[in-house]
Length: 395
Image: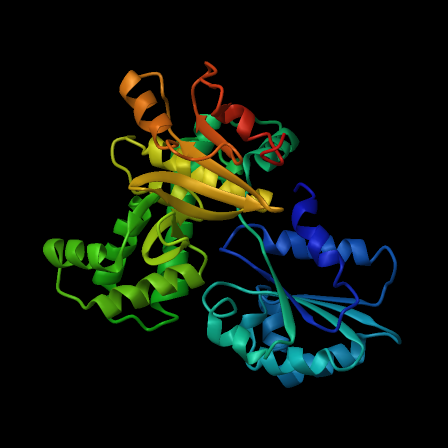
């Protein structure tokens, strides 16, 4: 597995802190691997390290609650600061109390856990500000190229647009094997992590909502529009139920919503949200007859890559014209339009006209999958294949 310095670097500053270090993220995004890489790095300076993976049934059978965990650490730690790594910690009862106790006795505690428990808001609340969290995401394209090279394979941009960046899926060569793995992962996230965790009684309603939302990535959406669709197609439900279900998807890092920024109010408009999937494969596995939604997946990919680069993202309302992204970092603003292609004249005019009346103090960018450079004197065109290799929009 590749070394993901992008995620390890911010954690490194807290190696010796008494704050509990939580590695968060959607299932199978590589949290456990990063935990192991941090452990291996620390082991280069000390052997006072304890590592427990609670997906190992042998460990769970012998350490099933907080008292047993505390006893195990006390018996196995050496003198001086001990570095404790607890993978899938939610498997033991009272894990919160154990972590809060361990940090008081010259221990540096690192934990990961599944979306079903550890990542929900109620659990982070129980640590009462005694933690710092670091979010891990599926691979971006630069990481994919590094990992597939390690595997002796290749991954095209189109493959990324369809099947996304969950690390393990690159071990499979055929589309059938990828789909089987991604469907199993989807079932685990939706059923095990959410339906079982939140004791959702209306399973059919929830699954229909999930399917609708994950097929609607890169679109402006509202609880009311989802409510109207579900009520018309399936069964009646309240808008409050829709809002609750959407919050479950966000807590499990399955989707993210970004707000709209308006030139008229100079503020965020909370009632307009645009939904992006954590990984575009969550859309693709819901498509029939290989009719993949490359247009919206491309925009979703650009969003994921911009977040990886460290930009704060908004949708921008330019006097009724939607600009896909207002990206901000280091007091710089970038207005970004995303399209699969602007080779067609109508598409060209539609996408470029969205920048009308925006001053030239901020960079205006359009990202497409075209090979021809469509840059103008005021708008910079970036080819998708070039964008995917950038570390910053200033490249």
